[in-house]
Image (cartoon, rainbow, N blue to C red; front, side, top):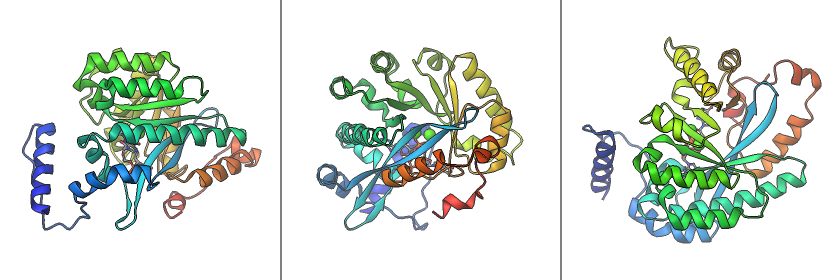
Length: 306
Ligand code: C2E
Ligand code: CA
Ligand code: CA
C-alpha cells in the first residue's frame, strides 16, 4: 500500500515540478494512508477533530500585533496530531477542501468575536487553496458567510495557485477584495513567480517565503533577494510580511530593510485561541520600556520549546 502511495505521490510531484523525482523508501518518515485520510476527513470536520492555531504578525514600526494567521490541524483519535502538510493535498484531491475551508472560516469568525470582546480588533488571515479560487460555489458561500458579520478577514493565496487558472482566479479575488477581504500573496519567491500576475493581483500584502528568511543572516544572496522584494512590493503599493523570523538578528536586518511586518517563532509559534488571548494580553501589558526598545528579549529557542 505504501509503495503505491509513494509512487502516486512521486508522480504528482514530478508532474508539478516538470522533472524526475526520486523517493527513498528506506528513509522512514511518518506516512499517512491517503485513502484512509480521505475516507475519514468529512466526519473529522463535523466531529470536531480539526482545530485551529493562530500565529501573530507584528507590525515592525508600530510595534503592534497587526493581524494573525489561522493554521488548521487535525487531532486524529488514533494517529495523533496531523499537520496540514500531510492532509491539505489529500483534502484538495478528494474535493473536501471547500468544506474544510468553510469550516475554518466559521471558526475564525467565531474566534474573532471572542478576541473583540477582549478588545482586540485584528484581521485574521485564512490560507486559501488555489483550486477554490475558481470554485463558484465556494466564492458564493464565502461571500454569504462574511456578509454583514463584520469580521475582518484576510486570504493568503500562493502564487502557483493563481497562475494555474489566472483569469477566473483574479476575477474572484477581486470579488473578495470588493467585499473587504484583505488579499495577501503567500510564499512569494517559492513558486512560479510571475511579475505579470503579481501586478494584476488585488493584493495588499506580500509574504516573503520563509526559505529566504531562515538563512537571512548566514547567506550572501538571501538578503539581496529579500531587500529587492521589499522594494518591489512597496513600488506596487503593497505591505511586506517576512515569515519564518526565528532570530533577533533576522528581525533587526528586516527592520533596517524596511520590512513592514514579521511573523515567526521569535514572536510566537502557532498557538491555540486561548494561548493567543493570553499572548495578546501579555503583549499589551508589556512595560513601555520593552515596547520602545527591543520587543523580543526572549531567546530564539524560547517559543520553540513552548
Ligand atoms: P504557510 O501558509 O506558509 O504557513 C507557514 C508555516 O510555517 C506553518 O506550518 C507554520 O507553523 C510554519 N512557521 C511559522 N513560523 C515559522 C518559523 O519561524 N520557522 C519555521 N521553520 N516555520 C515556521 P504549518 O502550520 O505546518 O502549515 C503548513 C502549510 O499548510 C501552510 O504554509 C499552508 O500553506 C497550509 N495550510 C495551513 N492551514 C491551512 C488551511 O486552513 N487551508 C489551506 N488550504 N492550507 C493550509
Ligand atoms: Ca500562509
Ligand atoms: Ca507562507
